[in-house]
Amino acid sequence: DAGITQSPRYKITETGRQVTLMCHQTWSHSYMFWYRQDLGHGLRLIYYSAAADITDKGEVPDGYVVSRSKTENFPLTLESATRSQTSVYFCASSEGTSGYNEQFFGPGTRLTVL
Amino acid sequence: AQKITQTQPGMFVQEKEAVTLDCTYDTSDPSYGLFWYKQPSSGEMIFLIYQGSYDQQNATEGRYSLNFQKARKSANLVISASQLGDSAMYFCAMREGSGYALNFGKGTSLLVTP
Image (cartoon, rainbow over the protein chains, first blue to last red):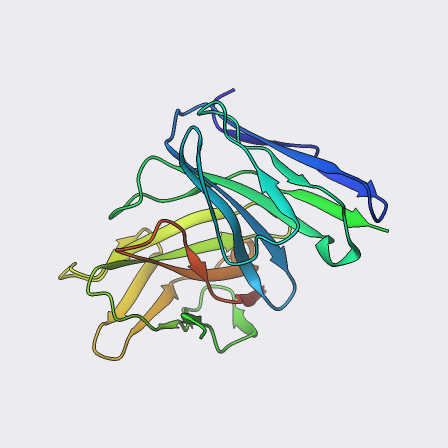
């Protein structure tokens, strides 16, 4: 199906473990984003990518790593999960970043770090 | 500094009434875009409406309209004829002309009552 998908939808892990959240889009959008949503903070940008092999930090990048070897995939890795990384993670994509180019969001991944 | 401020954590409105959700923003970039997203209890982010800084007219999309007051740096969302299905979190977001990602406010929770 066309669109933007995230997997897994729910994940429980333990402190110190490595976790990878997957994001896949079928529109061939150039831009992809990772946000985290926490109560009282709205959505905050973790990392973004302007094209394959081009990534850059957002507002809250510490403890996260991203890669983008293919245009359609943008995985987010927590190298050593901490309790403060318990959150809902949203992946988004857009065709461009000017004017009306809205961001399309995936369904989110709810991550709990015990 | 917070770029997007939503001062109403929660709002109530009766079905079929109109409701205004407040959003103020802060930027020195003359080119920017303002977005509103809806997040129902199911969690997905749904794009509602967009207003560009150079747009002469207020944006409208069905029952949604944006009251854009550039001098006051406000971009309030107006929902006319509220429906029970409008109950959700609403986020205001801004993308500055020089940036890629969206800066989100903390959101307003809207409850529509019968």
